[in-house]
Length: 358
Image (cartoon, rainbow, N blue to C red):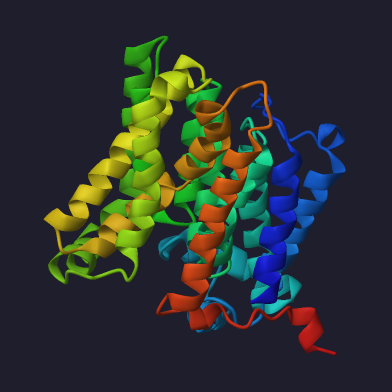
């Protein structure tokens, strides 16, 4: 458990010192990124990649890796989530086992997360908001979802820069690792301004192609599993509340956020979807289905809380009291999850694989 708190505390110290700035959304140019962020990228990748017996699906991923080792290359693309199957196949040849798979998965997630955080006015605050759930729970527990989420955050950066094509291609790539990611494709049509009809047609074609390729063969299974069987996702209500809380703040204080019209439009849709997800938990008993979709709404937290000190305080000040309050909120989230979540035992204790060999 200590490593989780050390990670949180390190980011907390940086969050206390930063001032609000506007970062360019663009390529991740290593020559222009501060050393602090490069170290954070490497540290997160290693912590995620070399975890040992950590995460709720750890043994399932081990069994999955053993199965894929005996599958022919061509057959990989007929399996569910072919991108993740391909990673397992590559790892079985280059060595390293599940740790190689997790290291690559950690790299995808960490890169997407840091790129996304670097586009926010308080990037360290955005990163801190991602530690308790997105980093500890998702990236260290559910590899396929974490890769899809990391790539989705890269896609959102492209969408903010009005690149519908790049956004769609990134989302399709994310869908290769977790098929639910393709549900984000309609955002391209909702946010298009120039050539709106062309964007709608393009998003429709891409969405249909992605659906046909990634989802169509599994719709019956998904419906049976998530709806008819009424699967309940433990903690779904808490996770959706974590989205609907910042969503409510944004919808109420929307006029005070220093964003472009395009960004406001994007996060307004995310906020509305968060509220809808919250309501759906009470209108349907299939909470797992809602929980899976809500996974891609999590970046909303990073955006809202990285803007909030200036929204509630003064733009020309450090607004340290608001920063501390937000940090305390996320420390409380992490504390409650680690000590009271019914499945937190699967993440405890954290073990770093190289140290287990000593």
